[in-house]
Image (cartoon, rainbow, N blue to C red; front, side, top):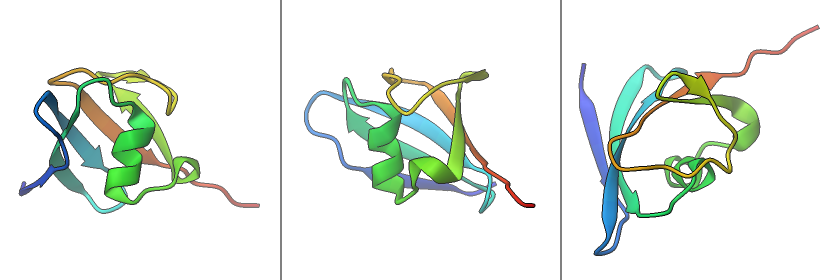
Length: 81
C-alpha cells in the first residue's frame, strides 16, 4: 500500500490518516488543530454527498472534530434505482 502525504497545516497541526475507498488509496494529511471532517474532505476534493466518513470505526458527520492520529475511512456512497 502506498501512502500519499498532504500538508496544509500551520504551526499547530495534526496528522490524519485517510483511506479513500473509491480509489483504494491511503493519504496522510496534516491539518490545523480543530479541523473537522468537512475540512479534510475539502482538502481531498471530495464532496460530502459522495462518502460516508468513519472515524476510528464509528460513522460520523462532516461536522465531527478531528484529533491528531485519527484514522478516517471515506466509504463510497452507492445509489441506484
